[in-house]
Length: 335
Image 1 (cartoon, rainbow, N blue to C red):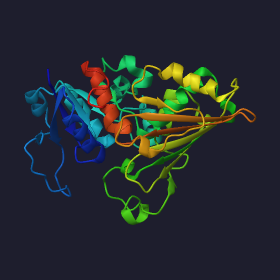
Image 2 (cartoon, rainbow, N blue to C red):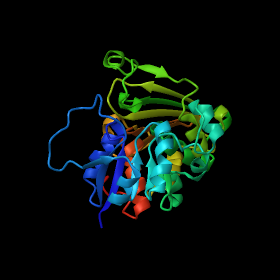
Image 3 (cartoon, one colour):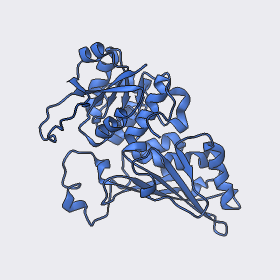
Image 4 (cartoon, helix red, strand yellow):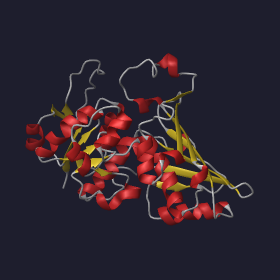
């Protein structure tokens, strides 16, 4: 039976990707929910299959029988709309950072704003399926992970849990993202002339995605150094992660950690030791590709993690979570 789902923020990059993926999903019918004016929007394209467009109101949720509402909106808008959509009877998948960090104190520390929905913040389930699948099907409010933490946690968490990381030596994550990761709202930093033929670091030691890595991979802040960089490309994230390995004799020992943890995961692809993924391998897919290199003499190890920031880092993972919440096959609409 087809389920109807709503999308708020469908004009943004992640929201538009949601529409694209949901339109080909065999078990859902997307409904576009308008929360703001169309000022600056692209001219509408005439086609017969355009999804239904309705005001973003409780009445629309109730009348359309929306099973889930996706919020591809800024955190402050998600805090405003999540309780309204839940009260109207829909479940919510939020793509912002509004409900990821668990406590108002953590949110205000990293987002520099007060959180006005502490009860929902405590209720929200963090939706990284490969790490927290059991809690997702019953979630009423699902917080979709950030793009950088998705790539980082999928690489780091199994290694930390297996005890093969020298945590005293620290973990360094050198992360690069395409410009769409900054969202569609115009800014000087992401304008064409600033991005093209350029490469820059930003939010050094204070990126708001850091606490998600600490939370999921069970690290202390002093153990993890993260720097984000802006690539002159549209989409994709590639993270190069450096650490010292302990209790490891060869690269196959590290690979076996991943093979044990991810053998049944449909969206994790492992490379042979000494080989690394690139962006071209993952763009427009929901895969996370992992490749590792290990030097036994020095104990140095490097893992490269690659995802599409708009798919596995946003819309695709949101649909993966939706599939789990609605009882569909996890890969439906994504392979």
